[in-house]
Amino acid sequence: MNNHAPLIHCHGVTKRFGSGDAAVLALRGADLEVLAGELLLLVGPSGCGKTTLLSIIGAMLDRDAGDCEVMGRDPRDMNATERAEFRSSSLGFVFQSFNLLQTLTAADNVAVPLLIAGERRRRAELRADELLDDVGLSGRRDSLPAQLSGGQQQRVAIARALAREPPLILCDEPTSNLDHETGLEMFELLRRATRPAGRALVVATHDTRIFAFADRIARMEDGRILEVVDRNGMTGNGG
Ligand SMILES: Nc1ncnc2c1ncn2[C@@H]1O[C@H](COP(=O)(O)OP(=O)(O)OP(=O)(O)O)[C@@H](O)[C@H]1O
Ligand SMILES: [Mg+2]
Image 1 (tube, rainbow, N blue to C red):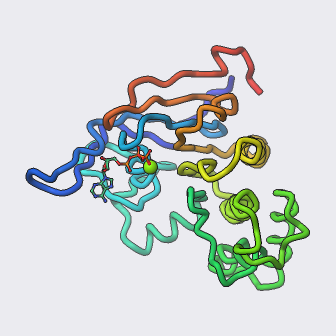
Image 2 (cartoon, rainbow, N blue to C red):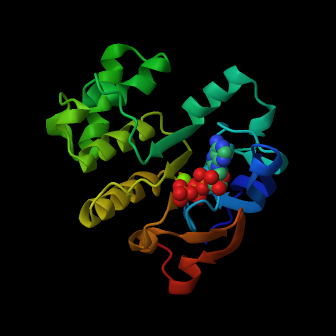
Image 3 (spheres, protein in one colour):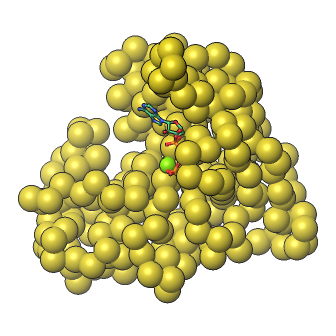
C-alpha cells in the first residue's frame, strides 16, 4: 500500500453538550486518522458520538479540547465565511435524511453547489446531467424529490455531494432509510465514485451489511474510538 498523508487527524477530541446535571460528554478523547483514498466506517452504538465527531470534522460544530486537522487546517480557526467556503469546496455531505430541496428537480438539486460556486447555469446543468448519469438517474433529471424513491433520492444526494469533486466526503447513516439491496448499491456507487479519484470517505453507520466495502473500520463507544480494524490487512485485498 502507498503511504498517504492523513487527510483527517483528530487527537484527544472532547465535546460536552449542556452544563451542570444535564451535561452530556459526547466525546471523551476521540483519536482518528483518515487517509486519502480510503473508505473508513465509523461504527458504534447509538449515542456513542459518531454524528458529533463528523460534525466537528465538517466544521459544523466546535470541539472543546484536543487537536483536529482536516486537510491541513484546523476547523476551529476558521471564521464563518471560511467555514462555509471550506464546506462547499472541500467537503461533500450525505445525510440520512437526504436534505434535498423539495421544490427543485433532481438536476437542479445537483446543480446548486456548482451555481453557488459561480459556475454558469448551462455548464452547471451539463455537469449535473453527467453526475445523474453516473448514479444511474439520467432518466429522472426533471423529477422532484417527492416523485423519487428513497434510494433514488439518496443517489441524487450522492451526485450532489460529488458535484464539486471534494477530496473528502462525510456520510452520516446514508443507508439507514434504504432496503438491503439499495443500500448495497449505494455503497458500490460511492466506492466507484471515490476510489479512482483518491477521495476519502468517512461513513457513520449501524449497518453491518456494508462492512465489506470498508478499508478500515473504527469502533466507537462512549465518546472514544476503541480500535481501528484494517480490513485490507486482514483480507489481503488491496482493491
Ligand atoms: N445538540 C445536542 N445537545 C445535547 N446533547 C447532544 C446534542 N447532540 C448530541 N448530543 C448527545 O451526545 C451524545 C452523542 O450523540 P451523537 O449524535 O454524536 O451520537 P451518534 O453516535 O451519532 O448516535 P446515533 O447512532 O443514534 O446517530 C448523545 O448522548 C447525544 O444525546
Ligand atoms: Mg448519529
